[in-house]
Image 1 (tube, rainbow, N blue to C red):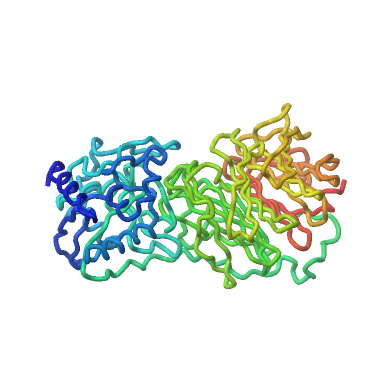
Image 2 (tube, rainbow, N blue to C red):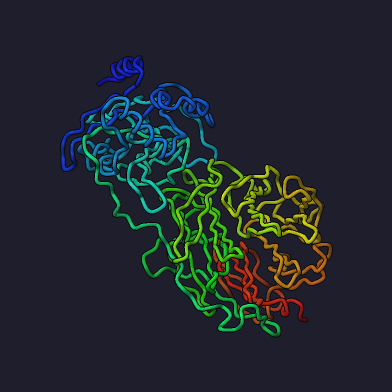
Length: 575
């Protein structure tokens, strides 16, 4: 069927109350008989079901016209459309299974694309990884169909499938505009959280008389945290170790032993004390920071050694930049995660999940669902005295973009972006004794110094002043934390490397400044952007992304991009 005839048929059915999509007959094979819509569902077709969706036409410049593929539709909404269409027509419509989708896409071919070994360049849209997506027409059926009369099976928009990909996500097929061509292959698999709405993502439908057997054979994304001994080694929970402590620095990133994907670039750690004892550390592992292969891995510390890395969190085919962990006083552990709509780390949604009593995790859910800036998670969330949870996220991909603050007043159930911007990206934040918030960040230097941001209204407005500390730059992330003994602690980088500073007067002065070394000469691998460095009496780690937690016994556990440091307040105050 040529494009003109298809368009006339579409106009004809659009004149009825229910614009039923044009269906293509799929040759019988190993699958039960079904028919598939010849094109992706368009704006006109979808909005007969949900007229309010018209407000999303043209979102970020995409999908403005009636005959463009509908986008910004979640899996739940796509499923609801199928149910509505079935009721209105008396026929049985649903999303395709992955097996149906790939069978129909291939149309009898066995090559990477139904066009052969390569995908014609003239059929493509913006088939590259882009930080800022280039608007392009999503009009359906602009190019020749496959052998079975199906248009846009490669590209245009990704398409929801009926199947679970894993415990958290639904399967997605077909690739999209503004994504590299290799993700348009017939066998390329991606996934998205069912709530997800994206300018990359739409759907098409199938018609059949049966209920399909869905693909539930994928390994579920239900990582568990193994039980570990108490970090205090049978000491009373709140007993502080006596005397100064500085233990041998050790790596916490160890290659997996179970086949978990592990890449050369391991970066951006987060860490927390587990309620049953031990530490949990997570970080991303990837070939490239703008990579779809990026996974979030975990290791557990039992007080003596770290476990080999295992899978912690992954949404297939999506960038996973930015993670944070928080253990509440109740013992509940929260995980915060940035989830991209493609490979770049600019357009992230903000997701969260909770650890269950058995050590597994609840499904990821979006707490800030739009794929947008201000959602790149920074390790080190805090709980204020009145119970608010504060989560910092980079306000944009630029090094001078500053930091956004997200706040929950109900234990993490609902969240709000304050709309304000803290000076410096990768900011660390603390609550002062008078209720004000204080944050230090990277970039946005004031008078050549690291900036300090202060807020007296819960983070909705800020004032700024210089600190006494040098600004930090590429490959460096600071920690600002209140120790359980009371002082504020800053871990950052100076001319001689990683130092720790203490303040007993709420950040007004920092009389204790100590290079993070015990003087022993070591050559260590800092990983990520740090590489090999020498630790001795006058030199400490030159750069790294820092994350920190403090155990009940007072031990401070500081992670850089690969190295685990252990020390206490007595050591910091010692000469």
